[in-house]
Image (cartoon, rainbow, N blue to C red):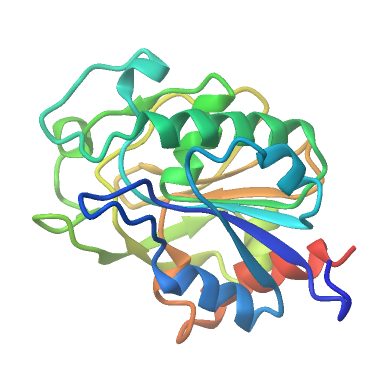
Length: 235
């Protein structure tokens, strides 16, 4: 926490692109700042991440490309993209640390999948192959699209969103197959795809498969996720 009392919120970033740039879409940091937090970006390859985490108050595992299927016993698929082993290795190590810690943690899309893999869970390599395309979770070639999500009444997530039915910005072609140990599913899409989980034994760990940052500026329920993370991180 800085001297003003604003909590420091760590965010993972994308890996190096073809122009040797490391970046993160601004919607993530905008959402954290609106909530009163200070975003701290942690890129793949950071060797001193433990020292960094010791200075932080909360953490967001962000979205991005796919996890290497070899890391969860999955199969390669033509639609698997942006596999970055450097990013995978760092984020899974960070996830394992967060799962054992008391640090408030939010997983978003890929970040949700990272937490699941770190806890022994598996992923569906390509959703259309297994659940069809009645519900669009991503538009071609790789664009976000809205769909509804049903949130379990009485869950921590529903109490934060103050809703049990929300419109989400969906941007994924993979999702959780087998849930990691100690997690509890708390939301699903109309086609049954798991859309969020919590960890009851962790003080504050919530993971959503959609992208709340994309609509948080105009959607109160989505911004409440970041507000809640920053609020609990103050303590």
